[in-house]
Each structure stands twice: as C-alpha cells, then as structure tokens.
Image (tube, rainbow, N blue to C red; front, side, top):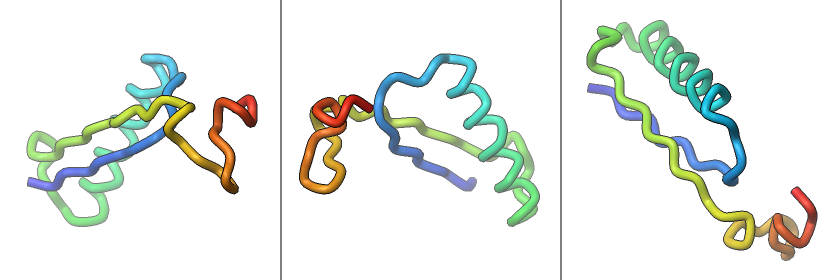
Length: 63
C-alpha cells in the first residue's frame, strides 16, 4: 500500500487538493504498478506563520 504525504502551505481550494490527490495517485499507479485502490494520499496544510522561506515566514512575505 503506497502512501504519499504532501505538505504545503495552507490556502489551496478543495478542487486544487482533489487534483493533487488524483495526480499523485495516478503517478504512483504508473510508477510502481500499485492497484489504485491501495494508494493513499495525505495532505498536511501548514499555517503561513509556520512556514519559513529564506528566514522569513510566508505570511510576512505575503504568500
């Protein structure tokens, strides 16, 4: 059972997250031959204040 964990900054729409789940699932099916029903995808959203880029929080960068 392949498991992909995706970590990204909060703020994506439900449609965007659905697209990530679909595309990552398909990539694992193609890459390792896993049956689609066995693939799991977990999306973890991190608050912008907890995501640093170049020593500055993403919130302070306006991202």
